Length: 422
Image (cartoon, rainbow, N blue to C red; front, side):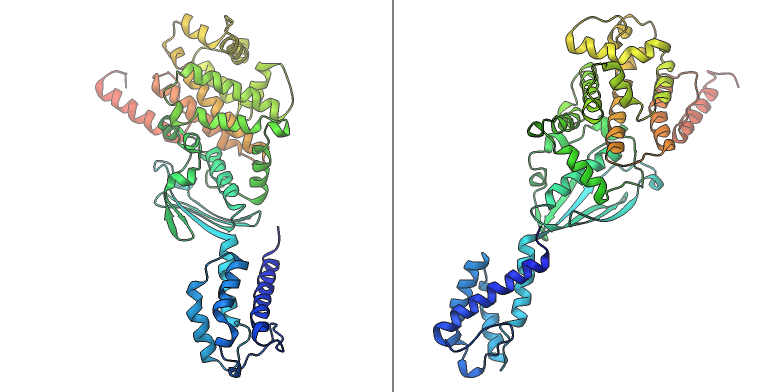
């Protein structure tokens, strides 16, 4: 990319050349450069101001009508005129704005997350684009300033990475370009179905970045490099990410949970193959992705539903093969639910959907260089396991602090109703 200084110098040269061309028509003996003095004896009309403006408009490809009167008045006021000095500076700003733009977006976010884990102010320069992001419960605003050819690529990358950190897409409320408000649907630019998160995932989203989200140049550019690889690069990364966003979108909200589970199994299997290596061991591939969020906690969740040992380790691979190839597997999730006598097994599909989606997000963040703290991973999985305990009133204790309070209040309620002994 050419530096701003080079662009400005090029602009300055264009102005001088145009001045030379117009002045030479009337005064061939005058040399025009940035130090030339034009006296009142020449008269501003003899300089052909209208001709100059028309020529500049053609060269710069911009409308300069608003400057015509200003140029005339400027030349009337000053005896010595240094080739439109002040005017050039104003035009430089206009040229800069033509090549550079400012985008401002006000977002709607969840309001029910602990503030100490959520609020954050981020200031970064990403591939020449200035990013200012303020995430608060009352007002979440993103401002980007920079080259118009790059700015949207950075915007969408930041927007998507916020999804990986927080588990849902922020919803734009207002969208401004260079101070002018535009329809937010224009911002989506064909991405609405992907970026419109299902309320189910919106309300149950688990934070992986908390108030330490990393949107540095390195992380963003790593994500873009990974994200943009498609079939032309002999990669399926682009399709994989698009598919994952669709799975958790409002457009897919009403699909059967078993089908969602199947899609997430495919996504995790594909992610392992694209991130790490080609492998035909489907079960191992998916488990490797699950390990990114915590295999131990995952096994604890399965144990709450009475699934343990080898059965717990192989259940994902059997389910992937059964759902994809329509080959009955005795140890698949579907078979366990069908033959199970435990009511909680009905939640197995949705539980695994939560885990796989969380693991997919964690794997992407780790791959692009973000280190998720162990306590954050544990808390994320605890929230899912606690959901099972609370939803099915299991004889186990919740691990996440916010759920321990709910559990305590429920116990107090049962004591008052006489359902349990004090």
